[in-house]
Image (cartoon, rainbow, N blue to C red; front, side, top):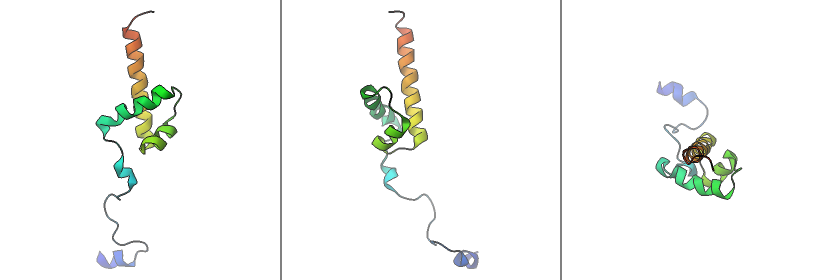
Length: 82
């Protein structure tokens, strides 16, 4: 096994999850709280803009925006007709 690994090109000590600036993303329990002000400022905000602001993955940003949108719809539907 070691001989095989030694003959392979590329870095030899790259095991596990890489450490990168992305490791500084907001914790999951704070994600909606940090995404909500962005959506309040711009209701047409895209996942790409959230990625740039919060340094999270696109899927994480899209999930947060979808959750916020669903929560707003629930609030509106619970308040009844205006």
